[in-house]
Length: 280
Ligand code: AMP
Image 1 (spheres, protein in one colour):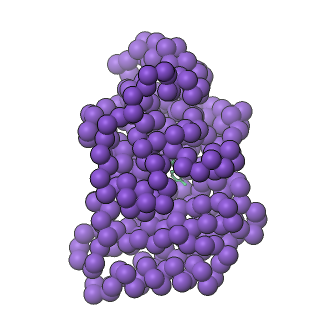
Image 2 (cartoon, rainbow, N blue to C red):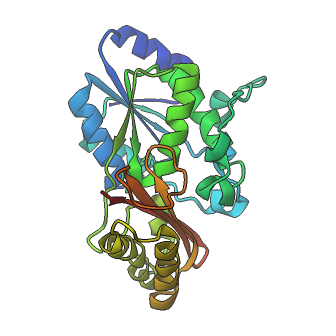
């Protein structure tokens, strides 16, 4: 496994390997089985797998969240080596945002004003900045993202449509702990009690799915879900939104188009998100 921190060294190596197909998995490190699932899928579908590890300051709307974000490069490299990852890119901030770096001109429309866009102002601007730059550096054939960050996948697809950077964006299923809690680097910041409590999110989403019937009012289901989290855990829900899978627009009824329920909640000072397709 090769590890690079310089853009020139990485692109030099990748140019030698082309036309081998390149699968790319961008991450912020503190890797867990969710990330490794993406690596495994990339490995199956490409000749070479490149994983980037870069905690992108531009996408943190909360400075404390950035400071506390878990980092463990040594362990990450060991895990990636065990998955036969070919190349790890661990750039510095200067390599990603060199002087004169131009922020992409991209209107995310509604994606920026609902759910994560609404509660984390500027977050997706930062995601767009880093993903565009990483795509331009790595120039992969396929790029892999987790459905756990459902809205992020939509943002990346929008970016990719606008700038035609990568032939295929692939969304991979959410890896979960035995309790149902979606794996996340931030789970490391939870106390054992909070971690146990946090399984309420997936339990609420699965119960919500069982409640869906044609004619059911999505707004009432969202209210039920918020109450269920508040009454049965120490978590503080920020939103539960029931939206069209294709456009992320709120749905007013269940009528054939796939629908996803998305949740964000605070466990102490750790913010967690999850989602589940609830219809059909
Ligand atoms: P992050 O390091 O949190 O930026 O995540 C890097 C990639 O891994 C993103 O595409 C995430 O959506 C994905 N990812 C994070 N957690 C999970 C999970 N539990 N299951 C599947 N993919 C995940």
